[in-house]
Image (tube, rainbow, N blue to C red; front, side, top):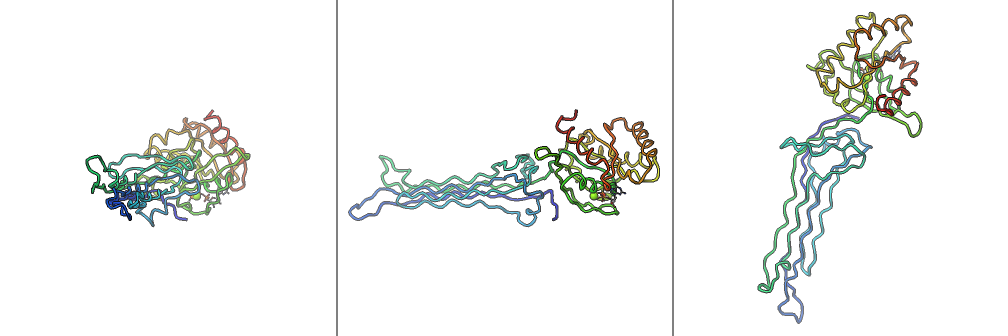
Length: 337
Ligand SMILES: Nc1nc2c(ncn2[C@@H]2O[C@H](COP(=O)(O)OP(=O)(O)OP(=O)(O)O)[C@@H](O)[C@H]2O)c(=O)[nH]1
Ligand SMILES: [Mg+2]
């Protein structure tokens, strides 16, 4: 399915129903008093987070959402029916902005969380309401008010505990396949992954965490090379970044410069993201000798002192992937200790 992480929509809540102008007309009661009922309130519009949706794609087809109008009041003191509220479902992790003033209205994180974004118009009052000792036959009513109208920008930032990061072909998707329930496409050409996807890594029935796989990042991504850089926002809410590095490439120098390119793109995008704890995962160890792995590790330690941990795996052969998964679970459960 196509992945869309930004959308602009217009919401118009329902109008309130008008109050009714009416007088009792019954046999044997020649001058019946006022009996016009109130209108119903207009339906409001809510946004609700839903764990079963993970893209804003639906909003590319439908952009206008209208709440139901309240019904007008009627004679015999009958109140008009209120407009039914409209609940629009969005993925967990959706931020909602008022487009006109660029103000954050809410950040829907938890499944079923609900926010009111456009209040329905207030009902109008029937003429019965205006009866008084001096005016027994009021001809006054009020009209229902218009519902609130807003233009909204929806922005999805996926919710994941662990973010995968790395050059194209490093083996990110192979790794998420090995450790989670996600089954993304894997291929030996760059930019196989075109949009972020999430996987749940389950250790036992009640212990799990979520990993986000994103497209490959390349030098110059910030100026639009490759898949660009905007997808990095989906890593902003993660607790830890796994920087997946292909260890099977020719020289140690090249490996170091590849790592450096990714770190530079990351800090060019957002300093906060670059400051997140990072583990390096040396992937494809099935293709290289043990002594090369050791040399690579010490070269990385010398050059990048900020790196918290270096793991070695073969995502394809599933060597030590289970161990990595357990370390990640432990890290998340203990808040990084
Ligand atoms: N030998 C070996 N090959 C691997 C390993 N992990 C991944 N590969 C291969 O490397 C290629 C790229 O793997 P992907 O998982 O698609 O890489 P990616 O990082 O998701 O790539 P993009 O989506 O393009 O960014 C595929 O041909 C995989 O089969 C590994 O541990 N050992
Ligand atoms: Mg991929």
